[in-house]
Amino acid sequence: MKLLTTIVLVCLATLPLDWKLNFTEAKAQADADHKMILLNFSGSDWCGPCIKLKKEVFESAAFEEYASKNLVLVRADFPRQKKNQLDKAQVEKNEMLAEKYNPKGLFPLTVLIDSRGNIVKEWEGFQPSTETFIADISKHSAAKN
Image 1 (cartoon, helix red, strand yellow):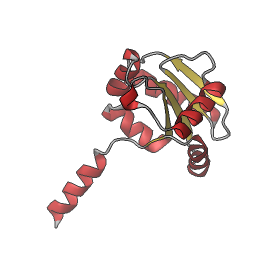
Image 2 (cartoon, one colour):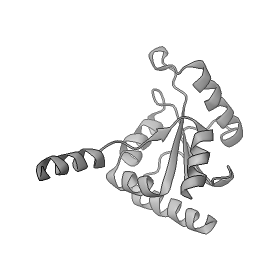
Image 3 (tube, helix red, strand yellow):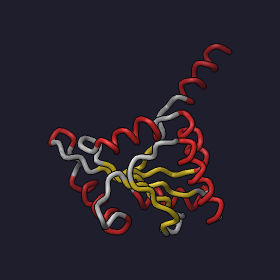
Image 4 (cartoon, rainbow, N blue to C red):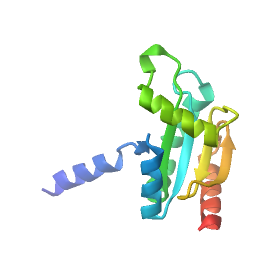
């Protein structure tokens, strides 16, 4: 029984982060949990820096550990390949987010947002140091709380 419990806990610990697609739900969760929102604009199938950011930063153990405790994550993806196209409703949601939080159309763009929907900090492009990125998020989150 102990072995089974250990296996289940290890599997749960290695599950990928829950990136939300619905910003309204994310805001409600952030408000309820007293967390900040991290919104990432990505071109998942055409933007090299976006792919690198996801793989090297967002999927790193350090980021996953920090984010699971401190952030509500939202991804607004803008794929170009036909096979990766999102449904129409999701495209509209992502476009509305882009109008408000990414009017210049930058990719990748990562935005730290408080639970009321106000921008706290933005990061353009790939973040080469996960530790520095986490420290910057933490600093701006602490200043806002």
